[in-house]
Image 1 (cartoon, rainbow, N blue to C red):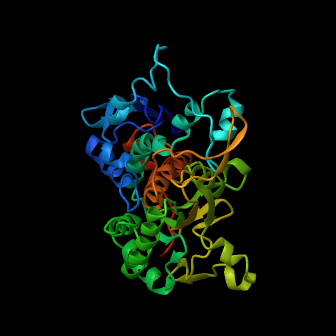
Image 2 (image 1 turned 180 degrees about the vertical axis):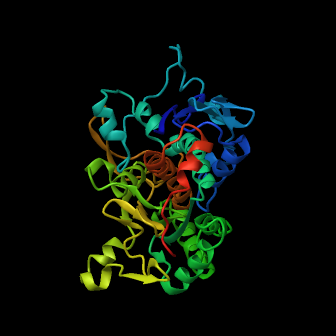
Length: 395
């Protein structure tokens, strides 16, 4: 099965990652991974770090002549900003006196991490808790994503809300999404269309309002969050399982989505809206036509009983505003135990568009593992042969 391990600090020498369990024979290139790394860096409201870093991956092992070997794949992304942080982030002990950070930012990992690990400098928390770690996760997960695409499974996303501004006309939006997901690359077409917007919104009239909200947050030294949707198309029926709690696909997807920094909520389909209705209004009725079953709705978000039901998976994800705000919030100096305003650590004003790309990536290994669990195969050729027996619904 696919496993991913990452290491590295935000301002350290580099971020490194290992992904194992990818079948042999999968074509993969630096260009493919860099394409998704570049998408991660996009979005209106990103901070100064994105003007410094231009993330490019280096494949260290596990690939020969452009194809995976079936062995662990090691990746590395160098931090360009390392040159400015050699003293502050030195591996070896140094004689220089480095100022210690003792004022935690509300909403960040600062306070809990400081006490959990017994640090006397919050910098030791900041560097690993930072969302910079997601760069190497995107790189590793892109390989699992490429495996899914070989099976005809595609992942996409788009932003539906920034702050208080959201897409109000769902009928119009859903019609556009339906047209896109029925193209050969399915959900990926949604992403490619969303990528044309600086906030990754498919509604141009709402895009302008979203940018205004972000602009106001920047002007006021504040931050803003939002909501995005992730869609997966081309799925067979029966990925995941109901027989044990830890094999339910919805639970596994929720776990990786919630592992993204600043994400505080996830729902499968319109779950919270469904909770306000009667069962007769919510459940997707089953029909038959020409000997094949189908549904007219997808309120379950593509998952029933912890398994894919043949419809697109739809996830809605809520991201809180970034914890670092320029104007500062009430906090405490942990060394002096006196009230102070929180310090500013270079950060984004809005990272919702970027988070949607990260979410696309992190769910790829989960779905790929469900495919491997059901169909098996140590090589891509063997996996594809087994996959031919997959059952698909008519939609």
